[in-house]
Length: 500
Image (cartoon, rainbow, N blue to C red; front, side, top):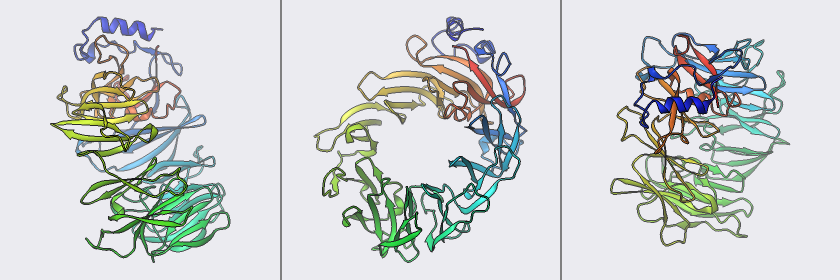
């Protein structure tokens, strides 16, 4: 067995700090792998047919659920062909006993020990038999995701092209004989003009615990006690609403529009404190432009003239009133940091400034300046910049800690669709071709003098979505990757144990 630290020393000692100085072909295959599943190197979990590509791995007890999609193998993936089909296949941790669980379905959630999947377009929920002995069992004719509650699954059942349906509660989804209980008819379906169907935070249906709020065709908003199934009128004259995660606040737009396009009209929007039964006017806008407006102790709404409007909720005050916050000039809101500080961004002379600002402070604090694309991690910001790498969709990666430490160069060359492992290493392809494959690398930001990270090759023909296969660490530290024939010339999904 070759230990990872020794292997890295051999590899990095043979090349300069520039990760492109050594060609992919010069990387010794298999030198970094420990035995797994009885094989000295990577072990194939699932063969892939021509035109089949893996995009997800989920672990349920001792089974792996492999999600794949099919395209015309004669067309390059980069031409964005339509997906011909979807498949979900269950295998053991080493690929044992493969069985196809369903076609045309995508995994969506789990509930009370059940694994749920929905139709390819997001409509129609099914329960999967993980042993493959029975076909997928349809349970609700509704948009996904379903609302999980303490007493069952909640949804608005309707045909995919309908705007209205029946609010139903399936109390015992594990019982094949169970029928959904109809709570009310003529309820708005879980879809939104701007955010698409089924989106959890951008529709007029909310549920938590044993309570739900739903919006009817006539503009009445109803609160339901899901234990009894009884509903009571809560608001009237409502066009659209959003409910906070804890259920205390409701943002709602009046039914009658004030102005604008008849399909996306502007109207008065109010904040209701359900604990006090009070309503406060916020602004005039069209609420469908806003997804989930609740962010920490703030409310963020979109106005077609002013842009994002930020209000402080004052959750901890005995009688909170929403307070409009005037942002620093030129700044926009990205999110909320610890201690109710706002994370802002603004453009200055071709640069993007990431800012930390607590309302009331005279000036925001600069976190970092960059010319790339930023993503948030728990302890700082990752910055992806493509200036140094000519390949489209590929560039360098840096990290700026929130605590004010120095900017750290993580990698000189990664793909935009990279992935972080639990130990901080980065899985990425480079030099992507028109089939969305390329050399698959594992980058360790801790290695490599002068920054930029040390790297080792995992596979010569890795799939661009291989980093996604490792989300949630389904194999307890082992890598999962898809290849177009880089391992022994066989297409498939592989399990690899990297030494170290």
